[in-house]
Amino acid sequence: MGNTPTRYGRAVIVVAVASFTLTNPGCRCPGAPANDPGGTPAKAPAPIVKATPPAATPQVVIPPRPQAFPPSVPPATVSGNIPLAVPLPEQINSPVQIRPNFDYFSWQSFIALNWPAASGSRGVPAQPGNPDVFLKATPGTPVVWGTYKDSEELFGQGNQRPTPWDSTTIPVNPCPNAPAGQKTLIFLSKGNTPLMQTKQAFSFPLIDQRNNYVYFDIRYNQAQYDFIRGQDADPASWLYLAKNLVPKENVPKGLQMPMSSPPSTLGSIMVKAAWRIKTDKDDASRYYSTPAFIYNPQTSTCVPATVLLVGLHIAHKVSPFTEWVWSTFEQVDNVPPDAGVTPPPAPPPAGYSFNNGTGSPATPNGYDYRPPVAPSIKAGAQPGASTLKPVQVTRVNPIPDTPQGASTRDLNAYYQQLLKGTVWQYYQLIVTQWPFQPGLDNFVLMQNGGVYPRDSGAAFPVNGAINTTMETYLQTQNDAAGAGGNSCMECHYGAGQSDFSWGLNRRAH
Ligand code: HEC
Image (cartoon, rainbow, N blue to C red):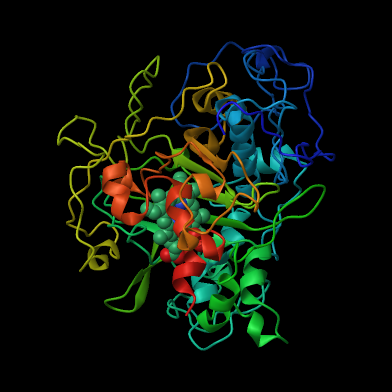
């Protein structure tokens, strides 16, 4: 790689979001909504009130685009259309140069995936061209990725065949006690899965400052789900069965899942989310929240709770990035800000989720201790009744501050401004990781002697791409060495023959 200019070929266009109309295209003026002719009536500047969404959400005001943003990074949009390409400049000299383009892609994907879902179908945004649908969504509204099929529906069905994409039937259902037909339960009885995972990838559980476990769920979009589920008429295509998967993986470049490309091909997207249990000490107006059932394997029952979204991984196989584009987001109150952030943000009103705010106990590698994996889940299954000890967490790998003026931090500020008045203003992109030299020509499976990052598309950044809620104990290269590495691509390269899906690699049975 070095200084060799890289071209990604044809797929460098931005997907047009044709149906999107700015309600207020004229305003580029900082702090100007008071004079916005099409928007809210003029009034004195309001003091900043913590965490109370305005009664009437203003029309979309696209904040002024920072001058340091490269021309190839389009202005932000509030759109429910998942981007199908990364917008890139003609000439690419270095990965840092194009980080803002990838961060733009991550943020637009985050908005589209968290768009309110159309009712009665999976993975479909409600009115994707109407920003109000997103900006005025009521708390707990099911979102697009939340209606994707859960990993358990694909891999947890034993001898049963996973049901078709649109089906709401789960042959093997860990929450049969969940009362049917109650409105608050619809998200999970439609999304169809309880939260039952507490153990992190190759690692340990995480306990928050309220003494509860953090729960994870993994979901696949239709392209990926259907690909793994296979055709009814062709049992050899059922890749959730190891006997079918293994021969398809044992080919020179491994298994290849569907890839997105413009103008309208939506390829594979996989999502992993981290949730914590809402208690009465928490300020739910700073979180995306939803009703859930928490599975207790000790009693084989499910306990209802409200859960708060604290982390979100998104992996999208989008042309020409054969090794996927990896994005990870966190709620801003998770851990104290990185050193050097000016001005330092005020501590969150209800405290950090994973740090007591005092600097003690110490967190040499980003955590003070690692809770045992077993007999784990028992206490976490009883919200509020737990006597578990919180893990003190800090971020080891700072949110990138390059390129200057258009870094991940800068894009966060820009998008948080765009999303003011919604819970999404309290989320931040931690990092985007992508293959700088994508393409199957460069790709060599690890199992065939491939070496990370060289043979996996030259990942950028090479390492240190981690979410504090999902890879808490793997933030340093040392800690992550045994688990495969401290970045998305480094670790998932170990599942390269399964097209980077650890879920497919580990859960096919
Ligand atoms: C140390 C290894 C490791 C690291 C680092 C890591 N992951 Fe994973 N990831 C896993 C494992 C293991 C799973 C679990 C698969 C399962 O149990 O179903 C997983 C699951 C996922 C899934 C769910 C789908 C699937 O089939 O793999 C996504 C999406 C994902 N990770 C994204 C990311 C992103 C984004 C990052 C970086 C910010 C990241 N991961 C870092 C190991 C890792």
